[in-house]
Length: 173
Image 1: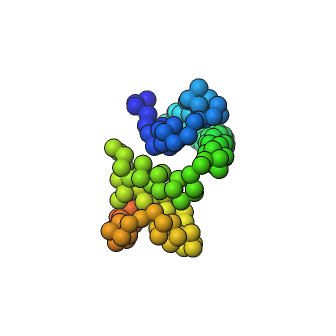
Image 2: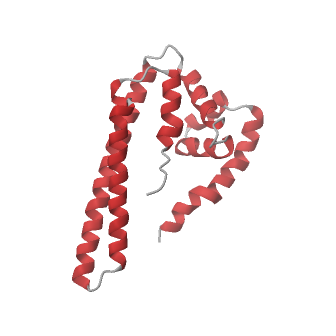
């Protein structure tokens, strides 16, 4: 295994640590072992994929696919549990913040778009994708994005569609 880069460790938790006092549930002592467990599960999945390449015979293939499905289901369950608990703690922390929700949104957007490894051309389309087609999308853009970025957002969105979102579509048969 090579160097692991976690979006949470690069983007989310540094911003949280700058903005709030992290509670125990989000401390590195608690979250790093959870992340390591997720990485171990991914390594197990990769090993199973390698085993699938050498499977011979129908019965062996059925067993291998069953094992892969069990490991994948366990990984998804563990990941969703980690994501849900992180999300609920972040929401709880931000609800007790003296700052208003729009100023927190703006701070997150500014942190993400000014990071070393990120920029508005990728970050904005990704963080706003789930809101597309809702009134919240237009309101968020109005509150948090300047005039020049709004014009560029359309270009960035098309680029993100081609370079990132379309990749998922290629996996669907």
